[in-house]
Amino acid sequence: DAGVTQSPTHLIKTRGQHVTLRCSPISGHKSVSWYQQVLGQGPQFIFQYYEKEERGRGNFPDRFSARQFPNYSSELNVNALLLGDSALYLCASSRGQRHTDTQYFGPGTRLTVL
Amino acid sequence: QQQVKQSPQSLIVQKGGISIINCAYENTAFDYFPWYQQFPGKGPALLIAIRPDVSEKKEGRFTISFNKSAKQFSLHIMDSQPGDSATYFCAASAASNRDDKIIFGKGTRLHILP
Image (cartoon, rainbow over all chains, first blue to last red; front, side, top):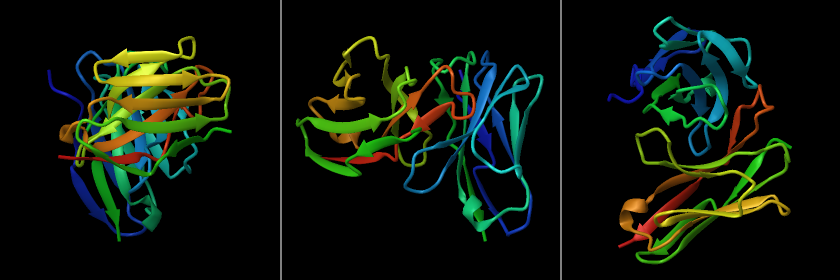
């Protein structure tokens, strides 16, 4: 089975622009979570979606938004990009929404904001 | 109170030795403690996890020791191999957490000398 896939792999944007990152979960997984990983730090939780509904939101500004589609794939949108948004954005999928459900991470999208 | 403090930041161990990484938490509501392994260019992958009702869990060469009263837990890698060289993250989560689904430590960069 294919693992979690994310696109694009790398992205370079300038301050003030908007970006959309995409994630396809493992087949059969209904939950998708998004994380931001700044260089040298652990992942920081941004959102969790389960059955197309938001089930959790981390401490991120409203410039960050996400959605989940009927096929359980997901998009993360970031508006008005700041230099500090430069990071690796990770998507993880799991079968359910329980916090003990094993999360499977994708390889991430490396976002650079200039 | 939501932090997970991880140490050391980096660790060098001889092949065949024991690698030990420590984590501490404050929030007594945490009830699930996973460890993740991350190789360069890859997303984190679940290595082993423990619930607070047990003091130790072993899977192959990897063991988690859990001290509920001290609010500390650690990862032991026995017979460390060069292939274990990676960054390791401890994490903690609680069923009651909606806005911080899972909290990661800052990571430990482990290097096993051949």
